[in-house]
Amino acid sequence: MVRRTGRRPGNPDTRDAILATARTAFAEKGYDGASIRHIATGAGVDPALVHHYFGTKDKLFLAAMNSPMDPGVVIPQALAGDPDAVGERLVRLFLSVWDSPAGNAGVAMLRSAVSSEWTARLFREFVVSQVLRRVRDLVPMSPEEAPLRVSLVASQLAGLAMARYVIKVEPLASAPPEVLVAAIGPTIQRYIHGDLPGAWPTDPKPPSD
Amino acid sequence: MVRRTGRRPGNPDTRDAILATARTAFAEKGYDGASIRHIATGAGVDPALVHHYFGTKDKLFLAAMNSPMDPGVVIPQALAGDPDAVGERLVRLFLSVWDSPAGNAGVAMLRSAVSSEWTARLFREFVVSQVLRRVRDLVPMSPEEAPLRVSLVASQLAGLAMARYVIKVEPLASAPPEVLVAAIGPTIQRYIHGDLPGAWPTDPKPPSD
Image 1: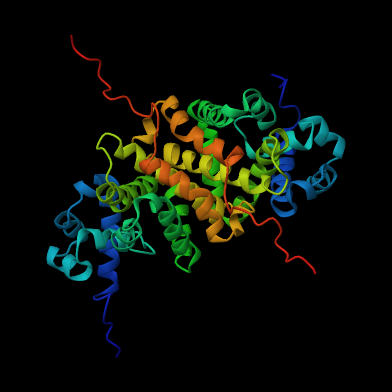
Image 2: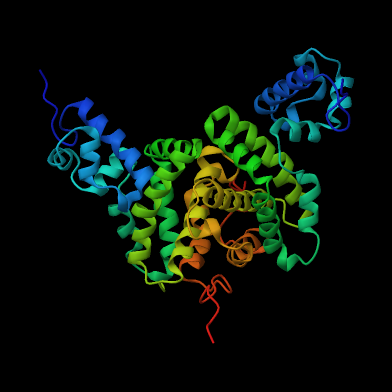
């Protein structure tokens, strides 16, 4: 008999039950609302087993989404360095992941995200908790502006993935990565650091007098 | 008995057979390769009946896609006017269609496009023949640059639709349209008219000597 070792310990049925329960919990309660304890109860196992199999809540979420990479690792790498070139670095990183064999898992995530309201909610929780919060926490931005800025970044990168890997609009679908880094990098740069005139009212409530 | 009049003449079964055959033809042969004669043969009807039901090949494609609007009408409207504000006008037009009840049909098109390779091909033919070609034909751009420019525009608008209407990333999902016009309009403007340094080699082949 071969014993499975390394990253995927344990009974496959138990793992799958935990992952299925985790997907439901993250979609229905959101990342912050879902707890390992609650997920363990739903899957009929001890919380210690979930920790043993998957480690942290972040890692459990990655496994539940079949994420092709760990945003907790790659995003800090992309954001480190010259702030004036952060847009180009993010586009380059994005393309390097999606152009690799891991990109198939990305397309599968995107297809799943679009297939129903429920899977869209799960994907949104993933993007917000694993990607957008990290960008927001690592890049100096004013707290009022940060949420819109990072959701604009998400819109351009999601559209890049759609156009290049799903819809395959030419010549974007087969353009060399550096062509797209030069074209789209400045968009991301402006969304993060640029002037977005009138993009947010300083206060949505009228001043009291 | 009520006789159906106006825009949807004829036997519903015959109409549906023509639309199903048209979807296959547009996906498999592309917009240019598909002909009304071929589609009529596939559906077992006379080409004159297809013309009678649907009019032009463009209109047949719109009907086959359940398109919420006719790009042949709205795009020329958006592109007319000050060239320095074409980006803002395109974003404003895009949001006005998608924020309206017609937006549900747009989301359905997007969901369908992502669901399989086949539907992605159909959607790509639609976007290229009905949307991107019109933008390219109506906006002065150099012929070498136009294809990449319009596919970049498509990437940002597809991502806006994904982020606002499908994934619903906040605050982008509920931002007032003019906030997004101010934020995303300049991106579209730059993709159409701006400087995209290094984005295309002048000639992919090495010069002969």
